[in-house]
Length: 431
Image 1 (cartoon, rainbow, N blue to C red):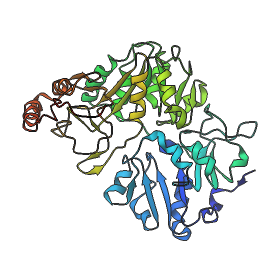
Image 2: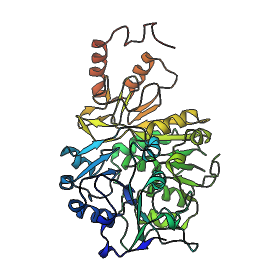
Image 3: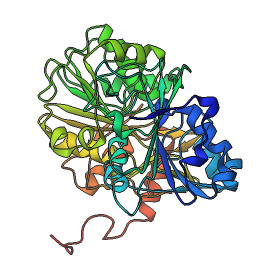
Image 4: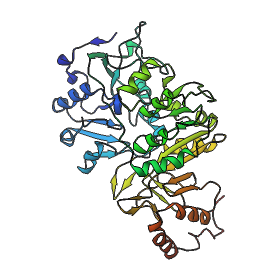
């Protein structure tokens, strides 16, 4: 059985060693009191490494890098401050690969910090606000320390935590960190209306985080019997459930369930998930499983991008040489939607940012999604379905959804850079 220690008496120096790698739940699942104590004790522990996910708070700051090194798969939120200080190393890769990585010797998690609700009557614990890759880390961690928080809901999940697997429990009553969505801008609403037209009744949805995904969900208020299978869900899903739009009745897998790896919202979402057994937390190996995604009838995956070139290559990671996004799970979900009967793989983005076109001839950052994973690109100016199109056809469709004021320059740049290989007229190449 785990040892119970009050937060005031917790000394993480007894559990974390120099050279260790420490992981905790991302977003709203961050056990903030434990992380704050860990960072306060860093000098006495000695050099160690932490893996960061999406931050919901600014718990980790550049001054902590005097002892601690930080690695992350993303450059969002407070991680940007670390990046600008040159103190965050990025691990690029598909989100679906993280569980295997954390269970391996190459990136073994030594210490796992969890945020969980009080135990069930049988003594087992649920995962709280996130399960995702924590399950894989739990299997290999040398030490597991859990913040047992009375304000964390008991959400249905894929498996329970055996109390014998937890070394230390720290009772708290501190509200979890919230991540409210920003109000959508007018351009978000214009894009959202176009995306909503691509979603058929009975579809199963995957959406990301931010004002645009929330705006897209809000535009589905007149749809029927939608389902959700996503890496994360926000308060906007609660709105659709309350309106009777999200029922999951037509899901071919997990019928009637809202399946997710992570709750990213406010206390309203936490409360709903704790009271409605339709919510189910699952591990990343399930939420991102290609067979599970392909088995969903009419799986519609909606993801964002920083840039899309005229042939369909997508940059979701860097702007101006700064890492601000992630490879994430976009490729996993887009491929799942392409394989799903009646599925629609969608990438949505504004056509411009600060007067600069985000539809480009050549990406200024890495290729996060290859053009071979062709999808449906949506801007406020239109919809370009790139599936089954040649390169020449794609360029024509993409120019049509670029901002009108940038189309002449894009067309001219395309002509200037044209060559037999780029125009798609060569016959050479592998099969």
